[in-house]
Length: 280
Ligand SMILES: Cc1cc2nc3c(=O)[nH]c(=O)nc-3n(C[C@H](O)[C@H](O)[C@H](O)COP(=O)(O)O)c2cc1C
Image (cartoon, rainbow, N blue to C red):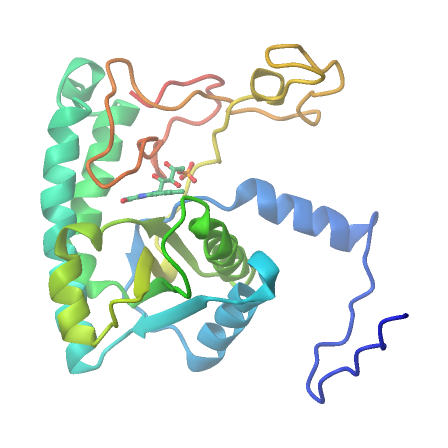
């Protein structure tokens, strides 16, 4: 039997024309290729409309069976929000202090004040020390309906990336982090987060301060295989003009205390024009 045609909801978003070429498509590709972690934010507030825009984009992301388990707890200026930001900031300071040692940020090129590694350390230091002044923090949560499974994150992290892409599209910036982890118990109590709701990410948002360097990612040919593991795909080439292709963790890297395995690459003060510049 043929399925009945679903009636659109009264406020359903109209189906957009899908551009496959032309300015809209290239704008989207540009947005995808240039959205990066923004940790230096101006103190200016984010408006309600801006928040609604980025959260709407977040909620357009896919989820398993379209169950839509994503929930977003926004922390701005209320008393509990301020306390929560303070708490997360304390967790971030402890987490970063540990990472600084584990990832040897103060060794090798880290001892040179102008090296990418040292600059990154300064950015991180400032990020965690001023975390409580972040204009907006969004706790991206996952409302569970069954026992946790390793793939559960796949129903919330696409929403996080949508949120960050939408933020960039309207002139905001931010970063997804795991800084809630060290203080999760206190946060849950403070914000009345039920046990069956997982806190999946802490996303900071605001207006970027200063200039931020380019996105640095491995070249396509290093990460794409075809037909079998390790086999090259001849067509897997970066678009013409792609620069700033760099690998991730510094030599001797272990793992991030908060679960992040790829240490943040250089921020605004990253050296310009260097291809293959290591993170540290
Ligand atoms: C799963 C995940 C966990 C992350 N955790 C943290 C974190 O705890 N703290 C932080 O400052 N950044 C965190 N980040 C941001 C990454 O460090 C950042 O996206 C990465 O280094 C690339 O940076 P770029 O976009 O500026 O090149 C995380 C990113 C992801 C995807």
